[in-house]
Length: 342
Ligand code: KG4
Ligand code: ZN
Image (cartoon, rainbow, N blue to C red; front, side):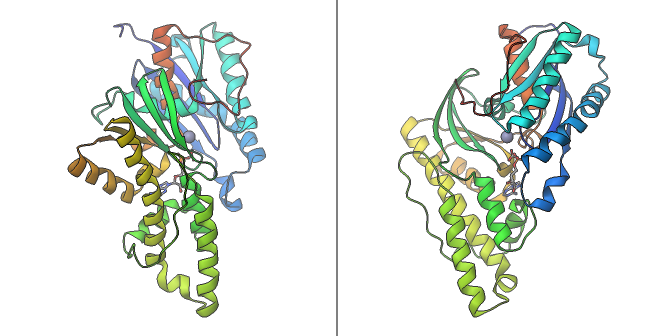
C-alpha cells in the first residue's frame, strides 16, 4: 500500500439508511448514518418513502461527513458509491449524487457492490484489531441478506450459500411482529431470549439442500403455534415471552450454525468473518466463541457501526479499488440485482 494519503468520500443509499463517510486510506475519519425512522410505523421498509427520505438526507449527510472529518471537498481523491444490490429508487439517489459530485470535482468515480462491502468492512483499520486472512468465509446476516461467501482475496469472492426466501433478520423481525413486538424486533427477541429457555418450544427446521438457507417456513410455523396457544390461553404470549423468544432464536441460530459448520467442513477454511446487523445477536456471538474454543475456528466481527448498513464499508472498498486503479465512468447505472463477483 502507498504512503500517500488517499481521501475517499463514500456514499451508501441502498435501503433505508442514508450514509456518507470520509476515509483517509483504510482509516475512517467520519461515518454519518441517517436512519429513516418513517418506516417504523409501517413495520418494514416502504421503498417509495425510502427514496424520498434519501433525497432529503443526502446533502446534509454528506456535508456532515466532510465537516466531521475536517476535510474540504477539494481534498478528495475519489468518490465511492453503492451501485447495488438494493432498492432501485434508493440506489438512484446515491448513484446520481456521486456521479454529479465526481463530475463537478473532476475526480474519479468508484462503484461498489454492497454485499462485497459488508465483507470488506473487516479491512477497515481501527482499534478493533486483526482482519481475517485469506482465504476466509464471510457470512453476512442482516435484515436484507443471508449469505456465505468464500473470499480468496479482496476481489475474488464466490457465493457458496444464500437464503432462498427471507433473510435471517427478517425471520427475527417477522417472528417478533407475530408476538406483538415493535419493528425491528430482532434486538428485542435477543433481549428476552437471554431470560428464557431455548428448549421450551420446538419449531421445525427447514430441509434445504446444500449450503442455502430458508426462513419463511419458520415464520408460518410460529404463526400457527401462536394461534393455537392463544386460543387456549389469550395471555399465552405475555406469560411466555422469554421462552418463546429463546426458542425462536435457538431455532434460527441452529439453522445458521448448521450451514456454517457444513461450509467449514466442505472448504476446510476455519477463518470465519461475520457482518450485518444480526451479528449483534448475543446468541450468535456465544456460538462463534464456542466454535473458537472447541473447533479451532478464528472468528471476526467488525465494530457494530460497520456491521449495519454504513458508508465506511463502501469507503474501504473505494480505497482498495483506488489502489488498483479500478475506476468507473459516468455511464455507470445503479443495479438493483447485483451478484457478488459479477
Ligand atoms: O444490517 P442491518 O442494520 O440492515 C439491513 O441491511 O438489513 O440489519 C438490521 C437487522 C434487523 O432485521 C434487526 O432486527 C437485526 O438486524 N438485528 C438483530 C439484532 N440487532 C439487530 N437481530 C437479532 N439480534 C440482535 N441483537
Ligand atoms: Zn446491507
